[in-house]
Image (cartoon, rainbow, N blue to C red; front, side):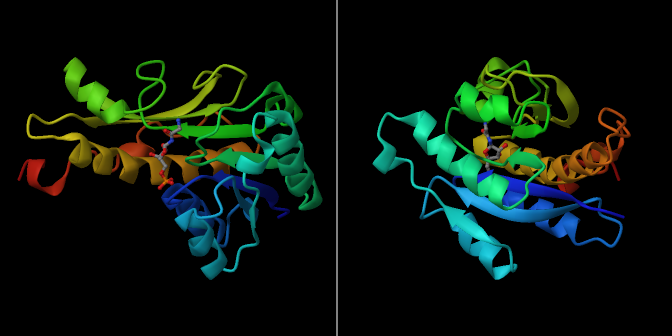
Length: 213
Ligand code: GAR
């Protein structure tokens, strides 16, 4: 099987990236991680990727100042040089311009920590608790020019418990992000987007303590 070459863009911890790397190493994986790139040279995820034997690149956005297009041109150059076919944003915390979005239109995915269209933007877990929603979760979607919009490919839901604070809810969602992103990318790389088993990412929506015995 030819594996689609995936470039992952990160800005920080990189746990979703790590989940994609792990999934890419399953024997039947339809994708491989060709490159991990960050706008933040200090991103912890760069070290994680390098330790896993993945090529890493840091392209610091700061020297480019307000010239976002020039920064994105530099990114695109590295992605193209690595033969990247699919771009996965995984905690990439820069707003993208039409330059990068247009270049990878229909083949750039993002993971967002809420059930879009609810709670786009930042601080999604605190806002979900504040709003009193009983279900929260994560979304994998295609990237378009509007932030946290674009066709939804898959979602996973988790319950919001009365005992939750921002951190406990974030941890429950993050565990689902890792499963959902890997599963969705695997289908997408086989040109089967949207056919994810809707229960696949709900394997363990409840934390141990809240599961009925
Ligand atoms: C993840 O929760 C991801 O969904 C979120 O940032 C976190 C990155 O964690 N992304 C966004 O909020 C994008 N709008 P990670 O670096 O450990 O994958």
